[in-house]
Image: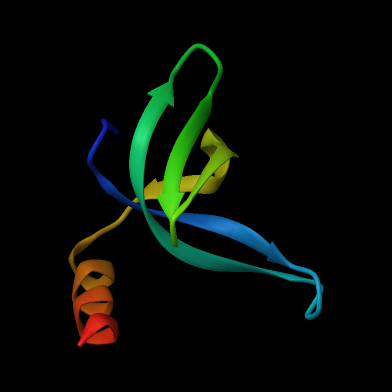
Length: 68
């Protein structure tokens, strides 16, 4: 993963007491910390690398439909 990649990451939903996936833009990834900084909905979030995946084509298509 490198800066500028579209990524999906796990977030905890407290009301449902469950994990869900969100999409964001990877701003910075520190491999020695194993932490990524993700821009999502105007907020910078620092997330463990184990909870971040590079988004694929289906995720990008879903995002483009959601924006329209």
